[in-house]
View 1 (cartoon, rainbow, N blue to C red):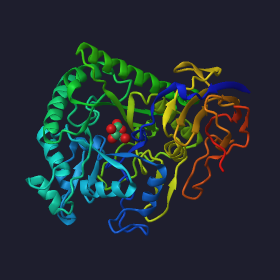
View 2 (view 1 turned 120 degrees about the horizontal axis):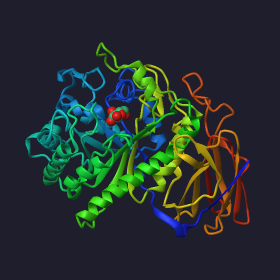
View 3 (view 1 turned 180 degrees about the vertical axis):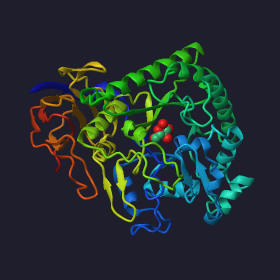
View 4 (view 1 turned 90 degrees about the horizontal axis):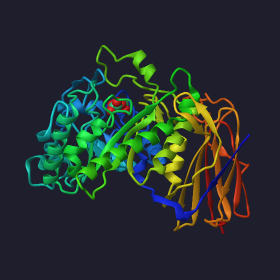
Length: 504
Ligand code: AHR
């Protein structure tokens, strides 16, 4: 049995909780779009062909922004293929995922879907096979008022009001040799800066995201960010970060410490961006958009390979998540929140079927994967300010990161409601943690809710037949006495503790 202590004190606020931390991602990949968000023949489909069950789960998940249409897909995408009368839209080969893209869903449908899901659309432009002119055309179509050719085309396609999309990604993973139109940092930095300047001339209110590294093990990591930002610092608002985690060679201890990797990557990108800013004598700070993160069993994907027969919406990257994966996802959300001073946007990749919290069967049910739960509860209850909690906890040895604390935790404090929330992960595979939460500074008087996601079998999963095999359950150990709360966190668990004024 481990013992750990955290203190919740509003004096130690990091930054506001940003709603955009809880973003997601819809790519034209596998069954994310077709039989994911869109399936006109499905019994729950609405008048636009969107699955009602998926829309309901998306709202329950609490996603704020949704990035679209890729991902690797965007680097070969012609956006205009996806607008206008559906029966006239061309079918194309998608080189990124070796699939056939029917273009039944495009920008107009996506924006309509996002509206129904209550999410803010975040678009990526193709800087792979295309460039600045195409980015300007897409921006004109999406955001300009009627009166010019492409804005009028949007109106003719049924949308009089401009979409007002604020966040735009300048390409995707342009550092990766797998990317169509992959570039050197110098080539990309120049193109990104020029594209950003031109886009701002058309719409000055944009928030622009320049591509950072595809992951922190890229040989060009940090050097890429430094070179790109040296070109584009004044023209962009965010630099992107991407990271996927999975157990390597069965090393679950290191996998459970994945948030250490996320912390290190964030710190490195902040340091790099600030170094460039210092050299430029700039007062501006570049923010971080962690717009692809998740657990992804990439070995399975590599072993399966890509389809050779160019199918429409094949089953690709359909990872089935277990309890351990959900605990890791919970810990990654804790890391994102802890860095809310610089990480002001993020997107879990992806939303449906493809490495996703929501799974569907064509013509059949939709259900919540294990990873759905920590995301949904963190998004729903993290409100107000993020609090630094400085846990005191023992460490365990990991092969990948050396000693890592068994406890990961972050707090939030909503001064308006007087509600404090603690999110906590026990990474130990054998021992529970008895957690002592010092609450004297927040002066809460009641435990509003204490839930834990854990299982005697940490490989337990949710499936179409047993969709609720793994759910968060009340944690009856939570006991509040004289400003101190004691709670037991089982091995390999994610917990949420809500405290506040006693309900009247
Ligand atoms: O999310 C799956 C893929 O991972 C995306 O298309 C790409 O950007 C990343 O490499």
